[in-house]
Image 1: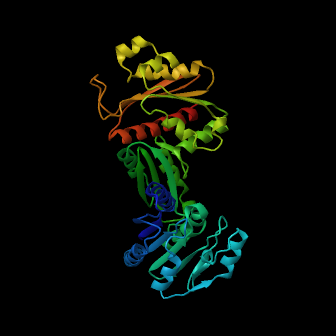
Image 2: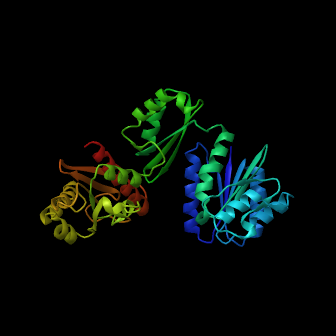
Image 3: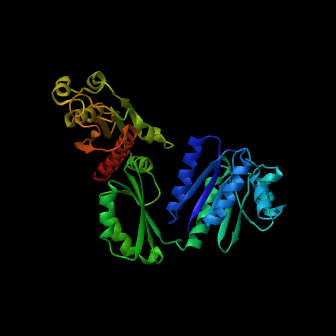
Amino acid sequence: MKTALILFSDKNLAAGKIADGIAETLFHAGLSLDFTEILSPTDDLGFKHSFERFRDTADNLIVADGAERSVGIKGIIADISDSPLFENETAKSICEENGGSDEYFYVMPINSTPIPNRKGAYQGFMTEDPEFTLAVLPPESDGLKDTLETVVVPYLAEKAGTAGKVACFGCFGGKKEIETALSSCAGDFVYELKEKDGDVTVAAVFKKDKKECRDEIREIAEKLSEFTYADSGITLSETLFTLLKINSLKISVAESFTAGRIAAKIVENAGASSVFTEGIACYSDVSKVGRLGVKAEDIVNNGAVSSVVAYQMAAGLLKSGNCDIAVATTGLSGPDGDGSGKPVGLCYIAVGTKDGVHTYKMNLKGDREKITATAVNAALFLAVKNIRRR
C-alpha cells in the first residue's frame, strides 16, 4: 500500500522536518511514506497536477494545508472530484469552540467525512473509495500532528491490516548487525528499518495481533538488547532525559568536535534544567587544559583525539562535583585530518560516573555532518546504556 504526501510550505527546511515527522508516525504504524511533494502556498496548478498524479499512483494521499490556507485546496479538490463544498455542522461547531469563524475552516466536499480537530480551528476531512483514501489535514501550527496520530494513521493502519500488529524498537548501531540479530529470531513477522546517523528504528509487523506474539516480541527484544535504547517512538534525547529525571541525576558534557550539539539535544526536552548542569564546547587544546584539567603533555604525546584525553575531559567534569554523569567527545570530523595521520572519522567518547570513566573508540564514516551527527547520537546512546547499568 503506497502513501503520498502533499505539503504546502514556503520554508523548505521546516517543511522537510514536518514531512519527516509524518513519515515517522506512519512508520510506527507499519506504514510507509512513499512519495512527498512540497509545494508553494500559491501553486494551484502544481497542486492539481500532483493530486491527479497521486490519485493514479498511490493508495492513500495526505494533504497538509499551509498556514495561510494555501491555494484554497478544499475548493480545488471539490472541483476535481465534482463534489461541491458544504458547511459541515459538526466541523463548524468544533471550529467555533476553538475560536474560528472563517467558513473555509469547516467547509468540505459533500461526500467527505470530517476529521475532528480539537487543537485548532481548521477542520480536515477524509474521502474514501475502494482504491483511494484522501485525508486533508490542518497546518502544522493548527493541529496537524494530533489529527494525524489520533484519526488518520489509525484508520490507514486498519485499512492496511497493520493495526495492533506492530512492535517498534529504537536502536543505535550498524544496520547489518541489527539485521543479523533480527534474522535469527523466530516468529511470523516482517520488519523494516529506518536509519539516520546511526539511530535505527525497527518496526516488526506480525501477522497476528501483537498481544498474541509476546514470546516473539520478547525474543526480538533480547536479540536487540545490546542495540536498544527504547521500545517505542521515544527519541534518544527523550530517553536520556527521562532516565536522568527518574533517577534524579545531573549530567554535564564536554564537547570538542561535536561543539555543543549534545548539549543542544538534551535541552530540546522541556524541563531540561532539572537534569542538565553545563555544556562546555572545548574546541581548542587550551580550553581542554584550562577548563577541564587535561594534561598538556598527554595532548602532546597522544594527540587531542585520543582515549586518554577523552577520559580526562570527562574526569574533569566529575571533579567539579556538579554532575552525576559526564560525557566527553573528541574526534576528527573532517574534511581534513589534524596532521597526525589519524583517519577522519576517528573519535573517542567518554562517559563517567562516580564509579569510573569508560572510553569508547569509534571509526565513523561519511562527510563532516554525518560523522558529527552520528557521534552525537552515539554519545546519547552510551550515556543511556551507562545509566541503565548503574
